[in-house]
Length: 343
Ligand code: SF4
Ligand code: FES
Image 1 (tube, rainbow, N blue to C red):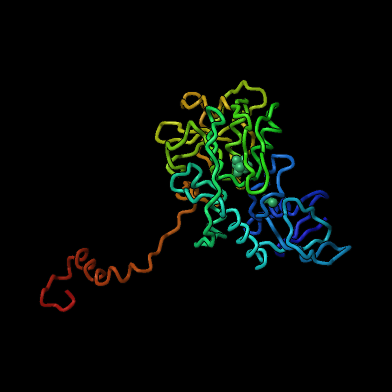
Image 2: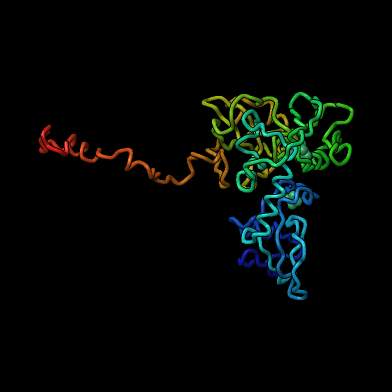
């Protein structure tokens, strides 16, 4: 089947969604995704960040789809034409969705451990409104302890439900989920029971915001001060790949996470033992620095980035007259004559 997104065509298998097709093409046209996660079955369809405009339904039925469609749950049809980044309507909708997600999300990035690698922060950076139109009080929840390793900040949750799907698919006894409905909906263990399954730490990795953070790393460092390295160890936990990213500050491993791809999705899930209990450099075989492909705060100054010459426009004015000085300093044959007007 052939599908065209923002003028770029690709052949895809039946059953491929528009978002998957866009990721196959890659680049700017890939819609943002806050709830879809390719490794989690049944994810997507909740946040509406990935809306696109279908300007031609298919070769057989070329009528455009009247509403914007969630690309992560809309299947491709043969001959379908889709507008993503190229559509002003889509850009406007993404702005609105971002504003909607931020209605209740606290703007506590300066003290949030997720800052720098937060999908909502990145989304706001591209589509956010610098001024909030919301004057009502934000929704807040009582803090709830969900165990020794994971910190839940329900106020930051955007109810993407990825963490629920991790618990459903990787663990054999899910003890948390979405409780209540509407404005009161929240992620909870209900019985305040600790989530102590061997794979529960993956909920931290899949959470797009700072609602689930690593208690062993909390407030230790901003992520951009850490240097990420790919590392592996012989892990004996069944189902764990033992391949991780270790985040180092000098010679110290401050946290361990799964390896994330350019869409911030982990390549393979890891066990809690690798994540929380192995913070000694000798526990790991360090493979080398981790590459980041997607733009984000932690990507800045990454060694794999192309070094670009920075041109500061004001330099010429600030340094006015210095050219002459430089000549004098470096060219001994030019005599220093205080009567000379140029001196
Ligand atoms: S806690 Fe995080 S992963 Fe879970 S639903 Fe909320 S935002 Fe999504
Ligand atoms: S990523 Fe498609 S609705 Fe959330």
